[in-house]
Length: 171
Figure (cartoon, rainbow, N blue to C red):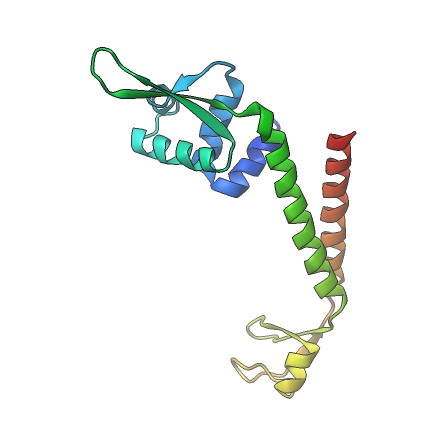
């Protein structure tokens, strides 16, 4: 049986990639600070990859670290943890940005008529199709009307779900 992924981890995966998401998830499940070498060992990742992704997570404000000089070696050790105070606000800001882009795309889809090349799948707005005399600029085939209702419905559904998610977080 597949377990449902935490939405915050999913957003980190979309923002920063698979490795960063796994590191974030590992930190997220732990309440204490963890050294980068411990994370690398636990996840079986190369230490350099872990460090690179931790700094990436840090740049986005998702994790914080504490630096301590080792008395034995004189080297610095870094202890990492989730920045729990800012994670939700960062995630909400990202959701608002995505929502804005989805609404812009929806407006574009609703305010244009589209034509498509039946041979190579190139899509053109009405103005572009008219400019090309309703022929594909790549292969010269005649363009056919493209009903984008499925795209419009998909965008509306995504917007509805995202707005619902944001309302639940603010309640």
